[in-house]
Every structure is written in structure tokens, then in C-alpha cells.
Image 1: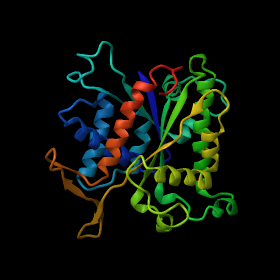
Image 2 (image 1 turned 135 degrees about the horizontal axis):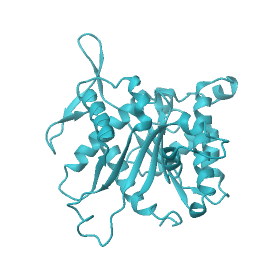
Image 3 (image 1 turned 90 degrees about the vertical axis):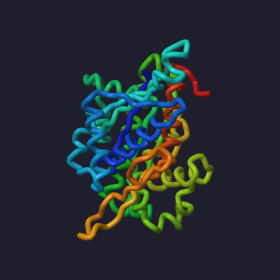
Length: 307
């Protein structure tokens, strides 16, 4: 089973992202054609359902829920009724997604050995999903050098340290020295991206669809100018384990104000499959799931080069 890791810092919207990912999986799994399905421990499934239920009730999940995210993990795999377990000559690829915090990974930097088995599994991940809070992105990159204690610099340092640790851990693993790490960047709270960045130095409104060269250029400009430590790790190379070019996805939730002035999550009807869901960019999550499905077949062999 291949490993993937979702990392974020506190307040970045990871809990809401997981609820939306679950919503997308429910919708994805309702399609008649084959595809990924999710299975997990009862505790993880219960937590995902609780977060989703909170969104469906119109509320954002409490940040107090985030302390449990290190315990959350689930597996994406082919349905036993699809082409996978019944018709394929071998067991289909599965991708285990582990949710953890940047702090818990970054603080391992410099340690000679990781005792925790769960953390070792996370460090073996060849797929890493980094959540970046769009509402916190500094408009002026010069502020990062003018303010020595800028909070964004701390995020950059933690993200860079976490990615460097993944590279170091796999480089020292004999079976993974020729492996490649596939980074995915998800901009959360995209609706709160500062307006200056939509039309300013980062090249305009975040382009869509996913695979456009404009979006890749926008994202790389963001990393180079506002997350230099993270960008340096992704582009350094030369140590055996290489990072692929990051792929970019976005996440946001439609909101409305109640009669009491409360900020509530907006719902919409899903005509294609029936029922209701939070208002969110399903096409982004659908593309993310399709990409994870593709990666599950490419990272199963730790020494295999990507196609």
C-alpha cells in the first residue's frame, strides 16, 4: 500500500478541507463507473462524517476538532465491484492518506531516529499534500524581510523543514534512494485570497482548469516570492530523491449571512446524484481525486521512476 500525507498548520482550514474531501468522495462514489472508494477505521470515518455533518448544518467545524487530525487516516482504493479486486490479475493499488500537522513533522528535524511507527509511515510518503491558507498570503513579499517575526515566515520554515525531512528520510532508506516525491499544493480559503493578489503581482485571478500552464506559473511565483524556504527544498535536487513539479488545487466554501448576521455555509442541490451538499468547487476535488488515483499506481514501487 502506498502512503500519502496531508500536512497543514493550525487554522489553515484542514478540518473544512477534510469535510469537503469526504463530500467529494461521497459524490465520486455514487457514480456508476469504476473509481476510488474510501475505507477507514470506524474512528476516522466517524470523524469525517461529523465534520461533513457540521458543514451540512451550515457551520464551520470548530478549530478544537483539529487536535484529532493526527489520528485521522483513510485509504483510497478501487471498489471490489469494479475492475479492481474481482477482475484484475493482481490486487489493485491503494493509497493511504494520513493527516498530520506541520509542527509534528518539522519538530523531528535533527533527530537521529523516529521511534513512532505512525510517524515513520508518514515519512515514507511519496505523495505529500501541503495545505496553504490563501487568506494569510502576504500581499507584499517585502514584508517578509522587513519583519523578522512575520508569522508567514514561520509557516514557510515549518513547511520547508517538513518537506526536507521527507526527502532526508527517504534518501537514507536503501529502497527509496531513487524514489520521487509528488507534491500537491492546495490553496484553502481561496475566497479569502487578498484582492490585490487576484489582480496584482501573482498574475491575476487563480486560473482554471487545473492543468493550465498559467496556474502552474502562478503557483511557482507564489512559492518563489513568498515561500522561499519551501521553494528551495522543492527545487534543490541532487540528493537522489527528487521532487516532482508541484500540482495546484484550490478549496473554498460558499457562505451566506443568516438573519442574525452569522456567517453560515451555503448548501446547494446536486441534481446529478440527488440530495444536497455544501457549496464548494467539486471539480477541483474531482481532479484531485483523479490525480491521487493515478499516483496510487505510480508510487507503489519505491524505486520506480514516474512514467
